[in-house]
Length: 235
Image (cartoon, rainbow, N blue to C red):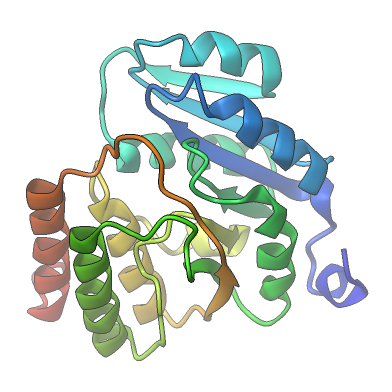
């Protein structure tokens, strides 16, 4: 890690916990774990098996430091909440969240962490993907990012990216709602409104296989979350 990063009170990779929500990710999780071990060799890897039926948990137990699970699918937000709580309880100074489906390239993880030199949250902003983002996801992302920026005053080019590095101190002040993808939206809004600094780090990404994002229902949940903040319903 850079000396500037250490001077901000984050002791290095040993204090990083990677939180990996996983649902039926047996085919992709091993490559994600291997790449994370190369990028962040001293980080703790925490997998949350969100009710998988394909052996994800068995693979995670062989390759990761901590494996948590739900017997039935609860949603990405619920999985993140559980994994983050475990990371914080374990003494992590930085929590890195990354999907288990191989969409995010773990090689960018150090860049996200370095961005915390001047920020409290660093988001991997997707650019020129090898496989284009599905149109509905792109539309939801654009509208959500624009709305979140208007609410928080922060420039957030990719609010729906789940590839994030977050300082431990943020979790002392931000408790987000939602059990599915709206959790990540709610977290960013609350963090931005609390004055935490949010940075974006350009990353490449790829889309392969089926997505667990439900275009209609999950988009509606995200819009509802934004609307409630916009109208002050959460205050």
